[in-house]
Each structure stands twice: as C-alpha cells, then as structure tokens.
Image (tube, rainbow, N blue to C red; front, top):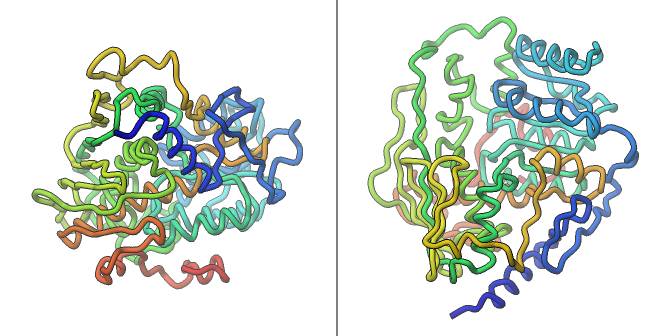
Amino acid sequence: MESLAERIFVYKELIKIMKRRTFLRDVGIMVAGASIIPMNSGCGWKNPNNLITIGMIGVGSHGVGRNLSHYLKYPELCRVVAVCDVSMSRAISAKNLVNNTYKSKDCKVYQDFRELLENKSIDAVQISTPDHWHVPISIMSALKGKHVCCEKPTLTIDEGRLLCDVINKTGVVYQVSVEDRFLPTYHKMAEIALNGRLGVLRHIEISLPINLLPKKGLEVTIPPKDLDYDLWLGPAPEIPFIYSRTFYHFRWYNAFSGGLLTDWGAHYCDTAQLVTGNEFSGPLEVTPAGETLYYNDGIFNTAYQFDLQYRYANNVTMRVASGNCLIRLEGDEGWVKSSGWINKLAASNDKVLDLTEKKVVLPTANDEFINFLESIKAGRKAIYSAESGHRTSSLLHCGNIALKLNRKVEWNPLNESFVNDPEAEKFRKREMREKWSYSKICPGYKY
C-alpha cells in the first residue's frame, strides 16, 4: 500500500515537474518544502507603493455582484478605472457604481473591450463575459501587457493550450476567477486528502445541480438599441437574438458554452484534479453511463442529464453526474463530503477532519482577487493559474466529447490528445468567425 510519505513525495514531484512553486511567503502561508519563484519576464509590479489599476470587461450580474464588488472592497490595493460591456446600459450602471463608491467622476466607460485595452493606464483586467469570449479576450489582454483575472471555463481544448502558451510567453499574471481554491470548505477537503486522512484515495463522487430553464424571453426579437449584439457574438456563429439565451442562460447553448458540465463541473472537478495530484495533468479515460439527455427546444442544446465515469493513471476513479450539489472523496480509510454549495464538511469519523498536524499545506488567500492583486505586486504566479484552469476545462471538454460520441474516449494528458481516435480529435477546436479567428488576434501562435 502506498504510504503517506510516498504520496507526499509524488505530490511534490508533480509540482516540481510543472515548475509551479506553492509557497506564499507574502501572505504568510506555509507550504511544505517549496518557495515561489519570481516571474522572470519583467512583468512584475514595478511600483509596489501605487494602486493597481483595473479595467472591468463584462459587467453583468456576476461581473458586478461578485467581481466588481470585491475589487471595490480593496482600495488599499487597487482602483477600478474603467468598465466595459457590450450593453451600454450595464456599462453605465457599473460606471456609476464605481464613481459613487470612490466619490469621483473618473471611471471611464467603454462598449468595445479593444478600446479599453488600448488604455495604457490600465494594469490589469477582470473578464466576466460569456464563455466563448474568455480565451480570446484573455489572449488579447495579455498581448497588450495586461494582467488577467478571467472567469472559467475555456470553450475548447486547443484554445486552452493556446492561452497557456500566450500567458507563458508574455509573463503576465493570470488568475482563473473561481473561488473554490479560497473557500474554507473545499480548501480543507483538499488538505484532508493530501495529508492522508482518507488513506489511499480511491474514488471521487461529484453531482452537479441541474438548472431551471427560463420561462420568459424565449422569442426571437431585435436586439436592444444599447446592445452591440454582433460584438456579443464575437467569434461565435451568427444566430438570431433571443434575450434569455444572451443574458445568463447562454451556458445552455453549445456555441457559447459547454453547459452544466463545464459550468458547475469547473468548480468541483478543480478540487478533484488537485486531490488526485493531477492539477497539471488529467484523466486517462472517460466513459458515459446511463442515459444522456440534451435540451432540444430550438433555443438550448447542451446536455442536462448525464453520468460520466473517469479514471486517472493512479487508478483513482471519478463519477461526474447531473443531479444534486455534492462532492465526496473516498479513501480506503475513510471519506469526506460536502453536500450543497459551501456546506459544512461531513466525514466517516472525527479523525478525518482533524488537521491540527499536517505536512501538506495548500496556498490560499482571502479570495481569488486578493491573490491576483498580491501576485501582481510580488511578480509571482497566481494560485489558480492558466495551466490549472486549462487542465480542468480539458477534463470537462473530454466529458462532453464522450457524451456526443456516446462512447468511451481515451485521453493522453502528456501530449494532450485522444488516443487513436480521429473522431474525437475533431472536437478539440471549433471554427470561429474569420474576423475573430486566432490567426487574426494572435498571429504567430499555433491553434
């Protein structure tokens, strides 16, 4: 049986291999046997006594309710100087919130993110757009020298790899804007597993809550006058404007997102990647089980009922299915779970939850925004890097591809390709409208 010492050694070696160090000296977080390696690209924060200037790209409900609201809480670290949204009414509303908070009239407002990126006074951007825009805007921002905090997930496997390549070459700080790494519930759950409290990890059970579809705004209509709908579509195919499919519920249409699997799955499966030692790798295979159901009303078309069985190289298995809100880690000496979002941990016994003594301590911060800002100032990588986010998204894309093909697919996480499966390989990327193709926005990079 694999010992705790052996598991800790393997975990450390994975970190070394991927050249990602996890000792957060600046926030007083100790991680066993490692230290942050400052970024050598020259993109670290040059003026540590000044505020980091932030441009907000996408200021809808989540962009304002969570992301913008958090930046406004940290006046000692940053200042929001610009907001942007394809809906001018939303952009103006966000501008007013910023100005009212700062008691000023300085916040600039944009409808086209490209104009915001030309503003040289902006150090970093927060991207809170629909999924199909995450990577293109992230890449264009990085190429302009802006540090990036961006919502999950990617849209395809290949564009995720392209994103990592661009971030590595430009050296900007990139943070995946997902809170799980910083929430006590999931942070403790990961440390429980990595410190051997469950014995040898055997299985992960994940259940994702099925969303309710909207009952209004389902007709094809003319876009609102203040909305640049063509820019909202961006690289996606041209389709008629439907209000409910444009605002929030875009997640259930596959031209814009991967549905429930890439939405909720991006949260729980990130924890799974971490505890299995695969933060920078992935599973070997994924197999559909049971019946898969897709929305089929002419408006939405992603899978809402599914059951996927994953297997990692170390023979840890994982089930990701639609249903409730749950993550459960099972080892040969115990289990730990959280039922419901951010709910208290339950375990097979009290010893599992006891972390008074631990050898593996994962980095954390108050939230992803604090870590992003502190990482910029320190010139180090953020906790949830582009590579980590890409690997989690790839796991989920593999799941969606298996569902589409209705069969098992085998994945090679080392060269990031499907094993002897040209049919699955076709789904690695998607066609983009020519004016937004990657050959246009980042010439010289392979996609």
